[in-house]
Image (cartoon, rainbow, N blue to C red; front, top):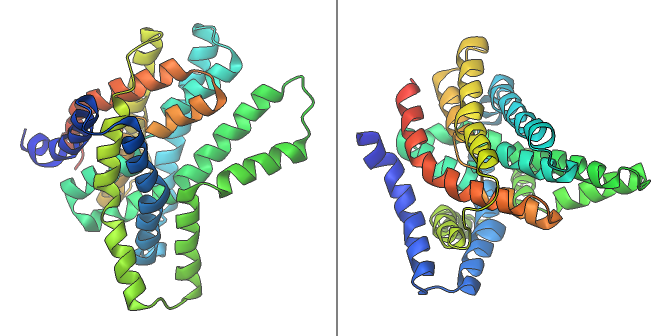
Length: 312
């Protein structure tokens, strides 16, 4: 119970502030969108930039850590994808968007603050190693599969498809922040102290601003759609993904405890708003995606508490 009070609830209190501010019209949709644009397109990339600068790259990027998290993520995706397509008879494009909901955990906005509150800032190296690959890998996979599904029978050229995927990934702000961090780190480019201080001031605003904005965005969502499919997606995101990560990391790959914590806590997060953004961009599976983000975020208060007790 103490973990729930000390670690989880403060994060959801900030989300609640954003939800209340929008619900009672202290903030309108334009203001909420402005907060989210600042958090996701500017402050969060700056946070990732500063985090990459501090990372011990050799220690953080452990192949076993990445294997445990990402193998479980893709199992979660294909479970949801095939269930949507074969059991629920959804079109192929809908099934890709639905699978993406089960794939894309809220690694940055929820995973980082909860891991930090539970285990300290020094425990975040594994989180940032996962996040460094999270958007490029998942967006690349999701876009490639969706464009393949849409192009079936239309004769889209392979070169055009590859160029579209590359352009979409490289223009993601989070990817830009990560890339800049690696460039500075690997080249040893010196940065003025005043610049670093200013960057750090922006970085510390990323998480609270993003959590507040997330609360405001959730007001727009209404539970709607196929509730059996939503229940399946909640199970994939909150149970299957972290469960497989835990079993693989602890019993198969024998991950060190800090790496195991980072992998499981990142996997245990509810689907992020990006899951809905992906569905909305392609105009498929929007109701299921929005409902799952809302419901799973609420349910994750309890499931995260369980995972905190399971982890060593």
